[in-house]
Length: 586
View (cartoon, rainbow, N blue to C red):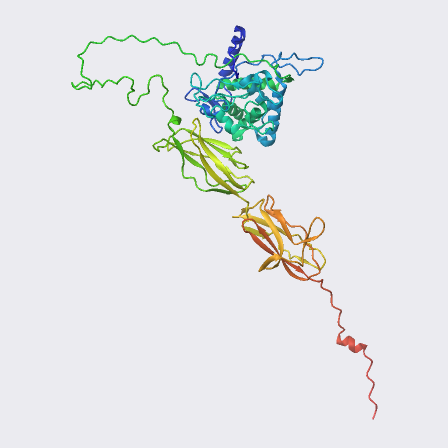
């Protein structure tokens, strides 16, 4: 049988202490927290607002354990001389659970270093949500020995969240329940779930998977958890309750002061819950006495006698515009029949660029009327490193007065090809919409040399200067653009030349075509050294890039010029000649 939350009670003394501490905490709100019109506490100055519907939070605002940390500081870590009795200290965390928290925090430090997630925050939330997986009742792989399920979210004292997973995660095909040691509701786990133990599955009942998912959930939207405002926003987005925020912060501070590892299954079990009185029928209010009225002459149904008496409503029917007694009025989400594309243009972007077009979906009734104030979730599916702005694979937005929800801008990664963005309605199981997006390879439209120095060489020698070019696209630096360089036969014949200048491969052999070249972060590409064989003349090097940019560079190989031998002048020749013999005398 699934292990559901218990309802054990603390003693009167502990209850009194808890009440005093919680009251003190509630009296001083966390920084950046205000109260909305519904009396809920929300943070200000951050995005998005955490005043969100329950179905769009991590836990569905499910109940949680309200046990407070001890007033004294945690015991120091145990040592051979001062062992800690298993289960005797709240500072002890079951070994596998503690390992899962630390591994998740380490993974987030690499994936999202700007988030500054502490493993102690995961421990604080895990304590409040499930008592550290019910005292560490997990197997060697980190999976709970029995499922940990929250109560049915059927609107009876809790949020009302109809089934979204056909019972796949929570075993309930009527309503959703929070699942696992970190208490994710199925609709949130569907996009937030992670594989933390590398077994190829995303299981909310596995503490490694759940801890990693919780870490990514808390680090979304670019939040920096080292700041109080973002920390409060992240915790409130997990469960939108000021009491919950205060309690998690108390446990966070407690674990920061010290903790230690204890054997699995020996953790302290929580005993008090936030919903101990939830779902109970309220005491009926007394019916006010009816004021006697003066009897009047009965009138005919429909007021045919000139009176304003309405026609009686037939038994079993409900007057138009009213809700039958005992039923819940339909929410805007209940009225949505389907999702329609709202004029999304073709989604194409170059690798590394932001898509210029945004996805827009429209929530409509069966009659085609737009439905405002419902949430639409956009999820990137398929093998791609593309994300929404902020680095997330999902986004949820509220429809406007026309029923349209616009997703944040898509950011292309390095992976090229097609991927799909799926739009689904939050809180209802209706068919979604798939949008195909295409990422093309990085391109350049212009290539220029970074130097105008002539490139010359003598036969059998090497060129003194290396060829360096800069690639741009629409005037901007074109980084990571693929390129090839080929020594061609002529301007009209781009085939590879078999003589003249050449490059050298790793073995020192001559090559006249280079592939797999890419420009650097500044759009620069510097080619290896060029060498010349014994052939003289003018040769051409052609560089091509993805996107069509082409540059042809001229190379000259000529023998070195030698200084000519000086020619004797006429005077030197004359002086060097023998003197003329005098003519004989007559």
